[in-house]
Image (cartoon, rainbow, N blue to C red; front, side, top):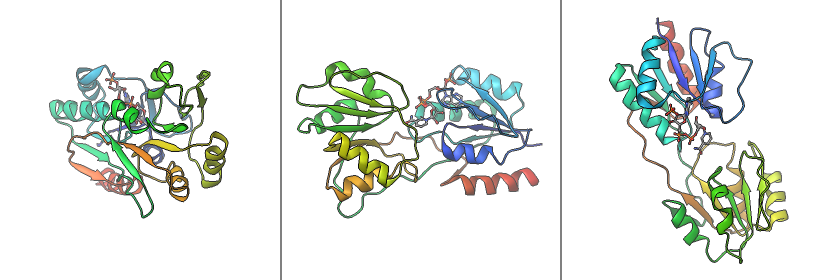
Length: 242
Ligand code: NAP
């Protein structure tokens, strides 16, 4: 019998988890909401590195791992790749395609935080949509800048930064209000792909604002790769029926 371990933390993963029966396990890091209405079992928290994951795969008799973590959750993806190789468990992944620039876009790639700081040096009102990373730099904000940082954290901010604790999806109307209220002049983003958080890019385009895009991390090869939850679920259903 196939027993699936689904590595989650994304909307795609949750959509797949909704299609899994009680025989399978949905795993979350524990940073966000934990669903309570799934048929499959849900476990929360890290495995304890590669060795911990190998031990888990063996103890739970997992026969297939599906990595549906966020494209920037590269450590978990690397650990899954290494652990599956050791435990001889096949690894599939949902690899959400990156957003592509459209006519009118002004995207500037940055490899890391240092490059982000360089790229925004001449701007005054950046909007950060990178998750929590900017919170570690709130004491370094130049006097010429006021930051708006959107992330899942009820951080109080400071005199040079407002933290917007909000969870997607975000729509065009709401993004326009945020850009107006915060007088945004540059956006800093991960290239997450998908629909839930792409409206900010459309607003940047219509206002001709630059977007500093943090480069995607390299992810390990997997046995089968899917571009969305629906195609992964199709393949899973086929595999679970046979
Ligand atoms: P990460 O750097 O790749 O992983 C850090 C550690 O968190 C992993 O080594 C693992 O701990 C644990 N972990 C991550 N995902 C897990 C899962 N699904 N189940 C059990 N343990 C997990 O990941 P991250 O960037 O901190 O992201 C954490 C979670 O948030 C991920 O599940 C990801 O899908 C989700 N998320 C991330 C982003 C993002 O921008 N990075 C955005 C949206 C959602 P051990 O080594 O102890 O096993």
